[in-house]
Amino acid sequence: MLVLLGACTPTPSSCDWQSDQLFTKYDFPVGVVADPGKLQAIPAYEAIVSSQFNRLTAENIMKPDALQPAEGVFFFSEADELVAYGERNGQQLHGHTLLWHKQLPFWMEQFQGTREEWDAMMKRHIQTIVAHFRGRVTGWDVINEAFLDDGTLRNNIWQQHIGPSYLEKAFRYAHEADPDAKLFYNDFSLAINPTKRAAVLQFLKRLVGNGFPVDGIGLQMHIFTRFPENEEISRAINEVWQAGFEVHLSELDVSMNPLSREMAFAPDRELVRQEEKYVYIFNAFGRIPSQFQYGITIWGVGDGDSWIRTSFNRQDYPLLFDDNYQAKPAYCNLIDP
Ligand code: G3I
Image (cartoon, rainbow, N blue to C red; front, top):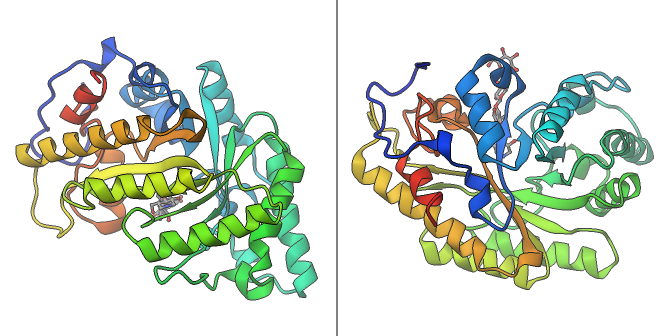
């Protein structure tokens, strides 16, 4: 049994994932972020990724700094291996992310040029990548996190040097390079912040109205056991599909320690709340019309893999499997819908 750092006491497990396949229980794709290094190094991690999910997203290796580390130098081999791994397992690949204000290569942040040269640089970045994966990537997060909480556009490098038209251009460039890929706008807090959600919806509806190819919206869903309320989550999902966009619950995890308390293991009461939250979300998503169900992606495999522990330096247990890759109550309930 592989034991990883993290919880002192493993969370209780009450079912055996080895005899089940989560994705077969749902009529929509159920995905997970996968890390190639861990797929090679940790047998239990690999076994869960290959058996429980039918879609993969790269956690980091398809971001701008990874794919174009130097200007005009594209590094595809790691991502190619992940795509090939998924194809061997019959899994789709969701591309994350073409544009973002984080994980940019240094040269891109420092790029000097006119508006036209910035536009050409952005176009080359998008089209080289999308063309490379053409036909092998189901959908792309074209733009990640372009809006602020107050509903205004973030002043990222694209906004600074190209202006707000960078968004519509990015979608058009991606579509030209792979007309069959679904194109997404992806962001956080869309389920808890109606102001931001309304601004994003209004902006994207205008783009679609003007003929730009936006297929869907990714609601990241980094949420908590006690927050937001279930009704808020349903409202957000419904507003998105009713506006005509496919819905991707793109980075789902359910944290239980927002105040960074001492939490050496996952308390039973929080595991129950977490289970209820996951189940509610899968059910709410399952009720929307199928043509709007792009899928649900879980942002990590075992609790020890979660970005939350490293990014916030806190003890937390947000995922479906514990530190030892044992199934948690949320998983056990999801496989028995
Ligand atoms: O690759 C370097 C390694 O060379 C170095 O030794 C090490 C030292 O810290 O850092 C490694 O990079 C880390 C990278 O993950 C790969 O492990 C970065 O420090 C770390 O910041 C980075 O975190 C990622 C984070 O995005 C960056 O913003 C998380 O893994 C990833 O889960 C997270 O994902 C984002 C989504 O893309 C967008 N939505 C929010 C979500 C959570 O932040």
